Image 1 (tube, rainbow, N blue to C red):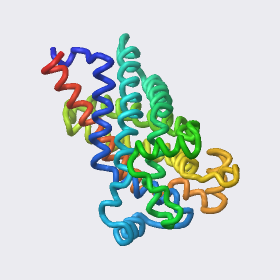
Image 2 (image 1 turned 120 degrees about the vertical axis):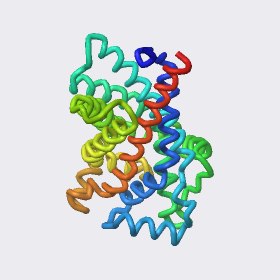
Image 3 (image 1 turned 90 degrees about the vertical axis):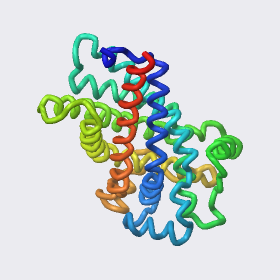
Image 4 (image 1 turned 90 degrees about the horizontal axis):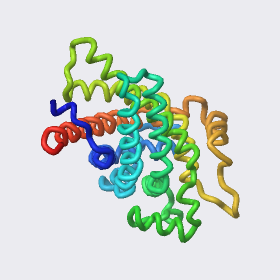
Length: 292
């Protein structure tokens, strides 16, 4: 009976954010590697980026921007998973929703979450990218709060939402793919009779969901990353928008460069998806069992 108890919306938001922050502590180095590869502008590899970081910046540099990563999860993931849980519950009143409804619910949750989380995202992109720049060009933010304060002071408050449109677009793609494919995969695996509700089901569902999400979202992600890291010189931004980034990447680096960093992206997104959903499911279960 305990599994039939509902979780209050406030608790859904808190559990969602906590799950995302816990997962980020494990995958922050992969996020940094992915961002460096997307910003490189040249052909590179995961091993080359890792060796360069270790040689020139040291092991702890792999965790550059962790404070921004945690704040991003505290804002973006809290919002998106909280809204998704709330909307999914509403859509499930007359029985399990179909895949299209799940995708729409996930997309809406991601869009709102992305808007809330964009300032932390901008800080994260810049902090993880800083080490690849010459010392004279580095921003040298001390932590995420220092980054946010300096961005407002040096570039204006609207700079905190730079790249909001591609960020929201990416989030809609990611969440439509991730949340819907996770729910759908779970449903399909349970119907096979080989799986029961538990960590093994959550793990397999998350890994499949992560693969679908990585493939669908990477072109939008690379546009978002480059826009948020760009500098404005004499009032002229480096890129006009997401479409301009994608066209220039295809023209200068080749079509498949839109999936540059695929393996670190999936290596980050897969485990992050797994850990987030495992933490999420376990915390929901514990709340229903011991508190509700």
